[in-house]
Length: 413
Ligand code: FAD
Image (cartoon, rainbow, N blue to C red):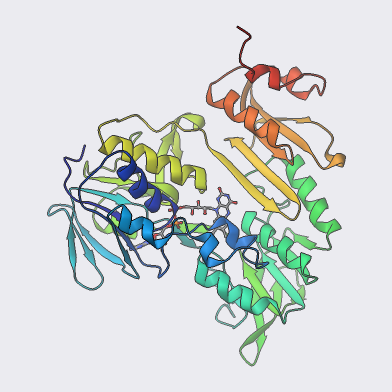
């Protein structure tokens, strides 16, 4: 617990912002600083691959809070400032400028960066990635004069972007090394639905092959070559092949890192004065049998931030929030509650042909996750059932006549 000494948050993203806001909400009265290397005040990333591309969201609507919020809550925002090193013994963060910020407690909320595509031609103009507002601005500016796009990677961001580009009448081809879309995160039934939905919107898929080279003319990309010998014409290429957690600061300071900064159930690193949260943190998740887990979602960033703020203001509880997630792809909203493993059984509720259905994932007879397409009620009920460990027999889940709402309705007095 911090005795009111300075708290420094490194990373001005979703998790860093929430940690500072929740600390103030919980009554922390000491000095509070957020250090962020991007120029913008904390903003939401999800619209960057959705409403922002179509102009429906603006930098103002993306902002998590207006500038006045930080002044009103005495949160010092150090933007465009990179934390270059930690000195755990002296409890100081060194900024790239050489300035040192003392802390009583440090919260690492450094997020992640795009996984690079180390291929010949990767330096050509017209190659884009999508993580930051600056990258979204660059992409949005280029979209107007473009006729053909190749998306590398059929994960969430690649598909969301593909759907937005296709809706503008642009020809889109998605190249995916695996054999189905979003394979890391969803059941085959959900993959099959989204593949068909995107194909119906004119998006073409090439599965089972990797990209070997980007070809260009006058330093602009003109085509993408694949391992199986194709040359796919492209005026723009969006690479969405995942992210790499930003662990460098923690690693250089001698803190354990794996696929993220390693923390315990309380979200503390090996140093009791340093916590780590959000996309950069690996924690033992009770929803994964306590296996080391790193989750890339708004829910996780927000709930972990709240958990650390509660601990630092004297209300320590182990982190145990249910993971949930959403992805908007064209007119389809995918929502996921819980964490499934590839071998978990999948039972479909509703008819995919209607465009609204859910897939219930079971480990033995225990409900572990529910993936819903345009069925928000299923998602909300699933969140309660899984979080509370309430049973739902598989035959009931799959029975459309069984009323799921009855399970969460308060009992009549
Ligand atoms: P980040 O948001 O990455 O913030 C970390 C910040 O720390 C960054 O600004 C980084 O530059 C900064 N930083 C790193 N190192 C340093 C340093 N040394 N010094 C100073 N600053 C540093 N999630 C969903 O649940 N649903 C969605 O639909 C969804 N859509 C998404 C769409 C896009 C395009 C992207 C990119 C992500 C999406 N996500 C979505 C994921 C979600 O946005 C992230 O999980 C969330 O932003 C993680 O928050 P974070 O604070 O941990 O990390």
